[in-house]
Every structure is written in structure tokens, then in C-alpha cells.
Amino acid sequence: MIRYILRRLVLMVPVAFLVTIGVFVLVRISPGDPALTFAGEERDPAAIAAIREEMGLNQPVPVQYVVWLAHVAQGDLGRSFQTHQRVLEAVTERLPATLELGLAALFFSVTVALVVGILSAVKRNSIVDLLSTSITLAGVSFPGFFLGIVLILLFAYVIPGHIFPPGGYVPLAQDVGDNLRRLVLPAITLATASLAVNLRQVRSSLLDVFGLDYMRTARGKGLHERTVITRHALKNALIPVVTLIGIQVGAIIEGAFITEQIFFWPGIGRLAVQAIPSGDYPVVQGVVLVSAFSYMFTTLVVDVLYAWFDPRISYGPASA
Amino acid sequence: MSGATLPVVLRVPRANRGTAIRYFARRNPRMIVGGAMVVAWLLIALLAPVVAPYDPIKVTVGDALRSPSLAHLLGTDDLGRDVLSRVIWGSRISLSVGLISVGIGFFVGVSVGLAAGYLGGKFDLFVMRGVDALLAFPALVLAIAITAALGPQIQNAMIAIGIVAIPAYARLTRGQTLAIRSRDFILAARTVGCTPLRIVTRHVFPNITNALIVQATLSTAFAILAEAALSFLGLGPQPPDPSWGQDVAYSTRYLANMKWWMSVGPGLAIFSAVFAFNFLGDALRDALDPRLRRSG
Image (tube, rainbow over all chains, first blue to last red; front, top):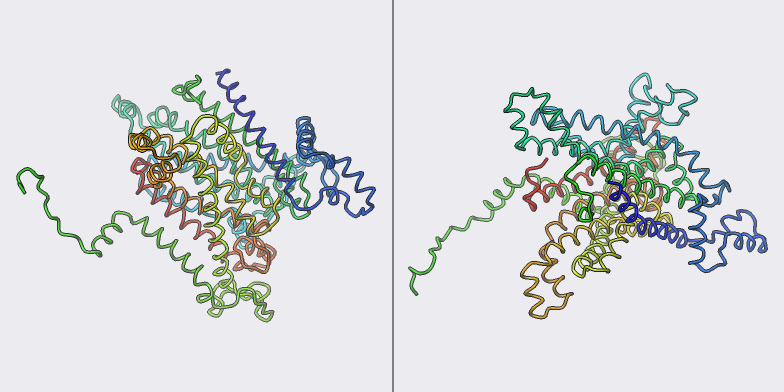
């Protein structure tokens, strides 16, 4: 198992390297002179030259990349052109809000997918099943931002009592109740697309397992139906769902960019989106890099968990 | 001619065209429904100048913020522009970005996949690591980053979404090419002296089109959704051009005033177009890949 993890880590190195090149190139192809943007109102050529020198923009591009990579490796993602705040600091300040939203969405999506998915597979062709297949079809096609707007309209304006506020964020430490009240709508918005995919996976992998011989054996030896489903079917059917949850993390990271914007949620997605119009590339670059690495890391963890859950997967060289 | 030595072929009366279509429709109802929705959107986009009741960018201050009525089926926005006309014209942008970006992803991804799968070796190893690097980014984050770097323009949104679509095609094509590479007909083609280019284009590619058609349909749905998301964030077409995502974003400033129709028109348009391509893609997958028929 440790060898498997080590192998995966080694395989990740070239990919991580290419990711850093990609992110670096993205900023270099951006229009405009970074030194001028950083200088802001300052138009003194000597001052701009000094900034260019300080930012290392006079050096050849490969050298700039190596210097930038060395800084990144030490956790230095540069400074925001707008606020001159350290990018890493800006990202870590906003990370708790994004994490809270992401975890809430993941929790909502997995719980509902499990409950509805199991019911829908067990009671095939029932109303629950019809509901679940409809959610699946609609959920993947419904744009997250439109869902967010519909939810805001309904729960913040149309339904009397204004159950949930239309947006904003209150830190958990400051007021737990208000924090949770403000969390509900963005979490549902963010969760819906992944809920649809998870639901489909839970239902179809359960249906696949239901057709297998050991299920017939379990029923044949007189086990209670609930035991057959929880002890025999679920345990095996959930293995593919674990992988899927890993993939959902990507969907949740990208969804956060949109959802945070609609609900004025001060996370890293909103940080990046607000940095784009002003050409604050270090911030965009930092957030994209953090997102990519979090996604890669989650994928690795999920692959390891998958191998751990399913004993049929070997860790040898053939298992790639 | 000695009839006894030949297999007897019964002459089956050819079914007329109507019967054939009815038979196909009965067997593939989802494909018909999905196909009809897609064709409907394509027709709306093509015939926008004819079917749109008003000029989508003409400002008529006297008509501002009117709720849906017979004169304006989806109401008007704060500048008095007809929401339905903007939705109809917006379909041109959404569908063209969807189709062109899928075209970019298809062309590059399939070429890379064919080359990597057929040539194998170090080329495969290096190229596929590049593809893995693209996959290391959450798709929309990469699209946002590329569009932000290139500048918020419709062409850049197309390029960004196209680049994001490359890995899916490259991996799919590579996998299918690897499966076909060792088959006898490829060996035969190689034996008679076909060049690698001819083998992949004339022998491998035609045999993997089924899977690619399904992927292309599903990724068009993703591309429309991604374009809407980019436009929502202000990274797509710029005002006053009609664009679904941008119009939904614009409408948010009137949510508190309950001018819901400004959001609902373009929002439902995105949903129905994405739904149409997803629905058609799922139906095609079921019809073209018998292994998947029993799941779901």
C-alpha cells in the first residue's frame, strides 16, 4: 500500500510541474505590463524600472519561471497588484469560508444522494425513483447560478417570512445561527450539480449489485431484506461512489467561483473573480494554483481510499 | 447458375419510409425527443432575425421593466429591451460558442489521442502527461483562468472552453485506438504499406466514431453551460450583445425589486439548451453502446 502511494506521488510530480508551467504561461500571455499595473498611479519611468527590476521582469522568461517556482515552493505566491497584500495571505484569509461552503455542499450532496439513491434503487419505478431520475436529469443541466437566483427569489423575497437572507457571510465564530442560515442557500446551489451525478451513481451501482449472485445467496439463506441491502449491497455499491466524491471536489471548487459571486460569499472563488477585471493576475494565478493542487491532492487521496476499500485492486505495477 | 448450392435469400419486402421512421422512433423515443429539442434550438438560432419579435439591443426607455404580457411574452429589462428577443438572439452566441469550442476540443483532442494511441512509446508518455496536467485543473477554473488571461471576448471564451474539452477527447480516442491497434485489419493495412497517417485516418478513426459522437454531444452541453458561466462572470460577450449568462448576471440587480422575468427567460433558455444536448447525448450513448443499456 505504501509503495502504491509513493508511486502515485512520483507520478504526480511531472503533472504538478506541467501545471505550474501552465499557470505561469497564463499570466505571461496576459495583456498589459505587470510592472505598470503594479505601479498603479505611479508614472515615473525610474520608479517603474525599479518595480520591473524588483519583479524580475528584465530577466529571460525561463529564469523568471524558475525564480517564480522557487518562490511558490516556499509559499510565496507574490503580491496583489491592487491591494499589495501577499496572495497567500489573501487566499488563506478566505479559505475557511470556501471550505465551509464546500464541505456543507459535499455533505448535502452525499447525504441526499445516498438516501434518495438507495430508496430509488430499492423501490424501482416508484414515485421516489421517478423523482430521483428527474433530479438527475435536471440537476446536471440546471446552471448553478440560475438555481441560486431562483432560490434567492423564493426564499429571500417571495415566501413570506424571508426564511433565508439573499446573501452575505457571518463567520462561524461570531454567530453560529446566522452563519448556518446564510449557508443553506449557497450550499444547496453548489451541491445540486454534484447531487445529480452522485444520485445517478448510487442508484446505478446498487442496481448493478442487485443482479449479482451473492445477493441471491444472501436472500436465499433467509436474511432480512434490510440486512441484505445494508450489509451486502451497499458495502459493494459504494466503492464507485467514493471515486465520484473525489471528482465532485473539482466540481465544488469550480462551482464555488460562481456560487460565491451570487451570494456575496467571501471565499477564494470570489477573490479570483473580483481580481479579473482589474488585471490582478497574481491573485488569479494564486487561486488557480491552489485550486489545481487541492484538486490533485483530493484525487490522490480518493484513489488511495478506493484501493483501500476494494481489495480486488492490486497495488503492483500493473495497477496504474 | 445452380440455385441449390447457394444460400436461399428470401426477398423481404422493403418497408416504406414512414414505417421505418415510426419503427426507429418507437425504439429510440429519447433520441427523437432530444434530437427534436436540439434541432429546435438550432432553428431558433439560425432564424433569429425572423423569429425575434423585437430588436434585442434597441433601448426603449418607455417600455422599461414591463412584466410578461402578450406584447412582450417574457417581459422587458430595465432599458426596455424585449427579454424574449434577447433570449432568441442569445441562442446564436451560446450555440456557436458551444459548437465551435467543441470543434476545437474535438479536433485537437482526437488528433492527440490518435497519435498517442497509435504511436505509443515516449510520445504517448509525454503527450498524455500534458493531458493529465490539463485534467489537474477543475474544468471551469481553467476556462476562467484562460479567458481572464486572454481577455474577456467571445473568441477567447471559445478557445478556453475548447482547450478544457481536449483531455476528454484525447483520453477517449487514445483508449479506443489502443484497443483497435492490434486488430487484424490494422495489421493488414500496415502489411500492404499504408502510412501511419492513412491508417489512423482511414482505418482507426471510422471505427471509433460512435464513442466520439456521444462525447461530442455531451460536451456541447458542457460547453453551453461553461459559456453561460463565463458570461455570467463577465468573461464572455460584452454588452450590449445579448448573451444568456450575462443577461442572468445583469438581472440580479433587480431581484430585490421582484423583476423575476429578467432572470427566468435567459435562465430557462440555458437550462433547456443544455438539457437538450444532455438528453440527446444520453440517448445516443444508450443506442450506440449496448454495454451501457442495462445501467441506470
